[in-house]
Image (cartoon, rainbow, N blue to C red; front, side, top):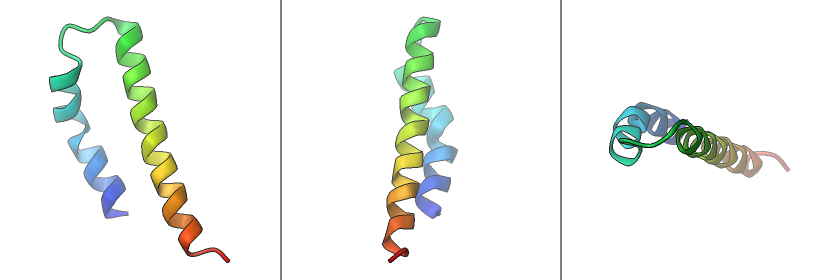
Length: 51
């Protein structure tokens, strides 16, 4: 859970650096990919505890 928490806390800093002067479509794609990666990471952690 701390991995997800840290990723979410760092989102604004990460976006500010990587999305400066980007168009709306690029921002949407980047944010969507970022959120999907976090969800995938969370799902992988959950699978460790399910047998």
